[in-house]
Image: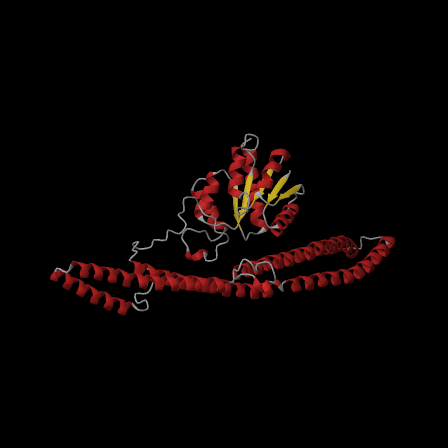
Amino acid sequence: MKILIVDDFSTMRRIIKNLLRDLGFTNTSEADDGQTALPMLQNGNFDFLVTDWNMPGMSGIELLKAVRADGKLKNLPILMVTAEAKRDQIIEAAQAGVNGYVVKPFTAAVLKEKIEKIFERVDASK
Amino acid sequence: MLGADNFEGRTELLDELKQRAQTLVQKLEEGDFPAAAEMIRYINEARDHSIYREVGKLTRGLHDAIVNFEIDASKAGLESDNFSKIANAQERLDYVINLTQKSADKTMDMVEQGIPVAEQLGAEASLLQADWQRLSRRDMKPDEFRELYRRIDQFLGQTVVHSGVLSEKFNSILLAQDFQDLSGQVIKKVITLVQDVEYRLVDLMRVAGQVEQLTGIFRGAIDVDVAKVADVVAEGPQIKADQRADVVSGQDDVDDLLSSLGF
């Protein structure tokens, strides 16, 4: 499975990459902003997107909406991993079609659980 | 209205205006229209002079504030002593970002190097343990035993080396935590800078308020509609989540919120 990790802080990308590797997901790519991520998704055959919210160019919520509006990408499973914790934001992300929402700081167990849950639902809907 | 009720010279201005007004009424009662017109002119002048004086003060205040902000554009870009306070604050916060990034990377490097060492120790010990159990069940041939003996000897030597490697990594991780002290000091300095800027802005507002009062500019209460939130505004990590009703306090809250909405 090919995963794209999007966050403007390289330390967080590294942490998530390592956690994913521990869970057995070794095929990962990185982007530092929604703006660079979107073309990668459009051209790249990714199976899963993990993204932050706050990014200077295109934010995670904007990336989420752009992906859901794209004919080719609209069913891509998306997990948000972010420090944003306002109820309104969580609701906005859910209504925009995010598959999972993890707040920072998070544990490896939480990340694993959310990813597994997302793929359970993806498999169940096939 | 902003500003103090007692700008300098307020009492004198009021007295002078009162005096002139009384003379004006008197002249009007006498039917002396030219003299009355003259009084009206005096009254306007008295007000105007006060305005000019206060505007002069405001200009001086603004000039002083700008000098104190140290945003002299012509000097910007030379030595760091001449940077504005705001540029200074930005520089310091950039430093904190770089410092914490370096520490995080260093720590993760040490962890990534240490994990395989620990795993190898555990793996080899597991294998040896299995054979050791065979030995204690007397389920081992002599040449197998000799091989086990050699492997244990080798393992003990390796463990000494590996333990040393792990200790060294742990020490490096400990030292890499020095960022907290350094960034803490820098952040304290930025807090001071920001408070200073705020203080000067408040001072400026006070001077502006005095002029408003003088000229009778009355805008009603100054309603500062901070951030008309049409869209949801991202706030970054929550510092006081437990004190706010519109914020979740952890992953469990997030999960509860989402399932309560059917997601």
